[in-house]
Length: 291
Image (spheres, rainbow, N blue to C red):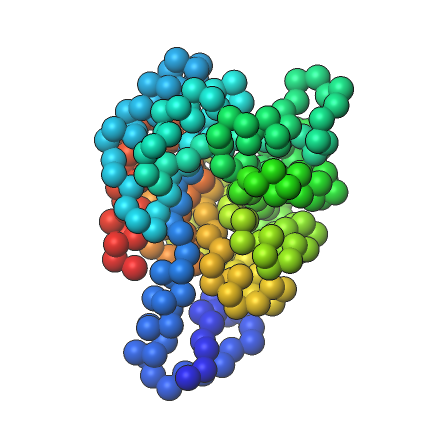
């Protein structure tokens, strides 16, 4: 049996045929089952330790996360120890830092190191978020150094990528995003890449109320997975979780999450409302059972 890749309409790519639709479906389902479905909440610069503890506690008590899925809280750095205590012992819940510095230690007032994050018990860190790239001028060289530092300390990386509206309007969004990845995490070897989660965040949809259509999200996620496949092989491409991160909310989550190459979401505003975040987790859990 030969392999098939799901190609967006009107897009050329290398394809091979299979003998039947049934074989295609079996291969697709087998590959999708290899990937972990993740719902991650990026709290950004919101909540206090007290309100954050209350928020995380409400979510943890309300949902049971099924096997093969994971829920991650990414609170401000000041909250990490407190939120880690909330999720400790709770199956398939985890904490992530929103940022680390690229240096091991040093005179970097106000910064946080990978060692500090790991010592709180947090297991993940966000790297490459568009707000870090835009406001703090983080370059690919800086991001590469941060990724390596995180991996050195046993952290898993949620690596963000995405295009601004001006790039999408010119039709250059695929090449723009793939360049972000080939200059950074796609330089890793397959073993190190196992600790990477990719989050696609169309910058034009963050905090604007706009959302990429399910088809737009799927097309980009497919392109990202294909880039991983070409650089690091089938196994890496089939196993990497690729999250969508552009104004995800209960009203649009199901249509986005059920796309073949979407493996969950990096959630902003909706993660600050316990009811909305709980609903997103339940939507994801229901879809994960069916895949």
